[in-house]
Length: 293
Image 1 (cartoon, rainbow, N blue to C red):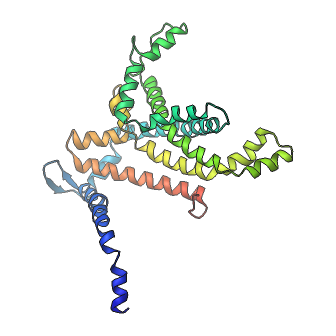
Image 2 (cartoon, rainbow, N blue to C red):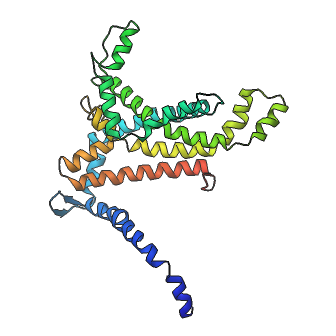
Image 3 (tube, rainbow, N blue to C red):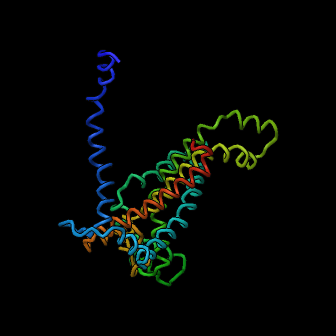
C-alpha cells in the first residue's frame, strides 16, 4: 500500500477516535474492571485479598440470591407474556380507522416517556389504603374490604406488574403499530376476494407478518424484565420483607449498602451469563441463522 492509500485509510480516524475512547472508557473498561473485582474482597475504599472463585461459590449457596433470582423469574414469567399480548391488542386498536385512534396512541404511549420516580410516586398515591384512588373505585362498586396493595406479597406483585405494564406497554405498542402499517394492503384485498373473514385474515396474514417484530419485542422484554429495579425499589423497597426483592436490588444492597463490591460483581456476572444464554436461545429459536428481522 503506497503513502497516498495510507493517508486515505487514516482520514476517518480523527472522527472515530473520540467515540472509540468514550466507548472504551465507559463500556469496555467497566466490564473488565467488574470481572477483576469479582475475584477480590473489594470494598468501596480499597482492594483487599485475592480470593479466586470464592465469591462465585458463595453466591451459588446463598439462599438470599436464589430467593431474589426466583422473584425476578416470577416477574419475567408473569409480565412478559402479558406485556406482549396487551401491546398487540392496543396496537390493533390504535390501527383502526376511527376518530379516536390518535387519542388511543397518545394515551398509552405518554406513560412510557415518564421517569421511574414519577410513575412510582403516582402508583403509591393511587394504591395507598383508605385514601387511594384504586380503593375508592373498588368501594364505589360495593366492595367494602380494604385491600392493602403494598403490604401483602401477592397484592404487591399485582401492583408492581400492573404499574410496569402501564408504564412500558406504550413503547411496544408503537413497535407493533409500525409493523401493522407496513403490511401490504394487497394481502388483505386478495384475501377478501377469496372470501376470508376478518378473523381468518388476522390468523393467516396479520400474525405471520408480525412474527419478526414479536420476536424482537419478546427478546427485549425478557432482558428488560430480568433487570427490573427502579419501580420495585421506590414502590415496595423489595417488601413486604423480601418477597418482591429482585436480583438487581439484592446486588445493589450488597454493593452499596453492605459495601461488598466483589460479591456484588460476582452476582452481576452470574446474571450476565443467564441473560446471555437466554438471548442465544431466543436468537436460535427465532432467528433461524441469526437474522431476527
